Amino acid sequence: MARAPLLESLRERLDPYPTVDDPSGRVRLQTLVLLRWTAIVGQLLAILFVHFGLDFRLPLLPALGVVGVSALLNIVLFIVYPSAKRLTEAGATGYLAFDLVQLSLLLYMTGGVENPFAVLILVPVTVSATILTLRSTVVLGLLAFVLAGALTADHYPLPWIADVGIALPDTYQWGTFIALTLGTLFIATYAWQVAEEARRMSDALVATQMALAREQQVSALGGLAAAAAHELGSPLGTIAVVVKEISRDTPPDNPLAEDIALLQSQVERCREILARLSRRPADSSDVEAFADLGIANLVEVAAQPWRRTGIAFTVTQQSPSPAPHLPRRPEIIHGLSNLLQNAMEFATSRVDVELRWDDRRIYLDILDDGPGLNVDILSALGEPYVTSRPDAGGMGLGVFIAMNLLRRSGATVALANRPGGGARASVTWARPAAAK
Image (spheres, rainbow, N blue to C red):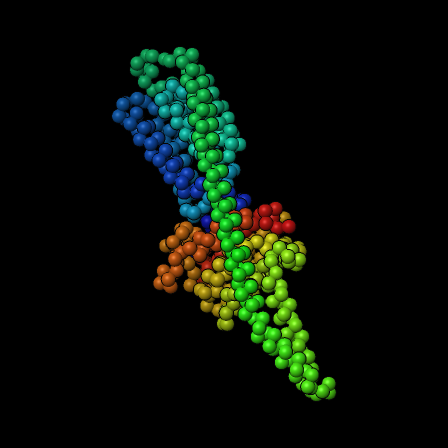
């Protein structure tokens, strides 16, 4: 029971800005973790083979210590964060910068640029060029340049120099440094250009698909509105005629006169509603009146379709300052609605929504008193086709869609079990990204 608060505390220390898990991240943390495990295994085998297989004396314990620190960090990241977590620009850049520094420390102890494995300095910069922006790639390229220069100027000698008696001249070492620099520059530039072109094509395709989907939805809604106006117009006209005749035949002092007048006013109201439905969306003048809602009202709107008898629903604001406003964007409403639907369906007697905020963030917690989430798949929730209720016919797409929609709005989404039972869905926005 104490493990969840401990992980939350550790996660907050390692990642004080939860917006690291946002839709702009193009690489999952798990992908970089797997790449680092590959590097760790390769480094470990190379060190042991050279030291014991070739009988060249290396500073074994310091070298293994550097590899061990990298492995320990990987283990911590694997435990603290879910497999679906995505890194922002700063997070991925820091991750790759650590790999550059760790590799440079190993090279420093094993010959510097004289070591044939010095060419691996290219790897983090190339990875950055394929997944990150030009700015991050330039930063990592400059770091690689500085580290390669430091390794050329100062390093432990190659382990076989004492046995063979051959020391590579400084000219050769600086030539290797220049070759590494030019190779890094060329490969990173080429990889970034190819990846950027692919990203532009992908972004254009996504934007086109979204525009087509919106047009289809608008067209469908317009057709439904026109059909509803047509189908309801005739019976409503009949009702209006009948009510008018009854009103004409009813004396003003009749007790039913007031009810008949009410019916007439409601008939007119229905006609106005049908007239609004038949208008095009662009003709509406009151759309912007509801563009922004208080966060509590937005939660009420998202929860309304899923309210059911026997399940108490409360929204609590825990911050004394005025409530922030969230834009009434479809992705926010649909994402929250999906999470609230799950909470309502699994809850035993109540669902509570707790809201709090400060100058930097908005926090929204959805709490239910149901059986909680399946711990065997908890870390994988948010991936497509992963569901905690296969017996109910769930496809595992609801949470995936909800989390990605909310991430598009700049939110971080986390799912966990509550210590006292039930589940918690936590949504966090950075104030500049989500609130006005």
